[in-house]
Length: 180
Ligand code: 5GP
Ligand code: MG
Ligand code: MG
Image 1: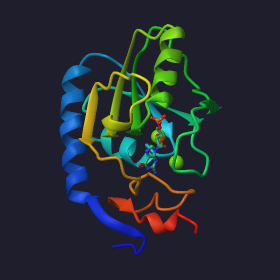
Image 2: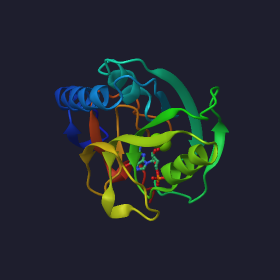
Image 3: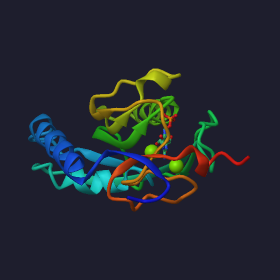
């Protein structure tokens, strides 16, 4: 285990199991459709890569990068588009894939944007959900794990761009980001 990790919450086995189960459900729900699966960069990239390999129906992939966090561990409340989709969502079934829903601001913004752009349907699949810290309402259609209010890293999730490559999800030691 990495020295900056307090505790491992989900190891590779747990992550594989949850992506398989979500993929099986999505295979049924999107059968006969051609959903546009949108990865919210960069945190969701590992989850998205594993998840789509478990979806056994036609899918198209696209990527969107929004920023709300900067280098801090608390949400700034501001959402801005850093990279927009290449694909039009008009009349498409859109599945947004996210790493973690915290305040809900990011997904509330993106889901509303896709509805405004006339998507046929907009659904959300998040690996992790922190329901305690929600500020803005978000309808999460598919969720892997409900997590406590701690700062998590690994499997795509970063602190100041580090730890994304850890093959598990763990709680970051607070000594790493508390400078005093
Ligand atoms: P929201 O807009 O829901 O507050 O924030 C969503 C984004 O905040 C996530 O996509 C993620 O980038 C970041 N975030 C929220 N909680 C955590 C966390 O525990 N660890 C990390 N690394 N990022 C988080
Ligand atoms: Mg994210
Ligand atoms: Mg981040």
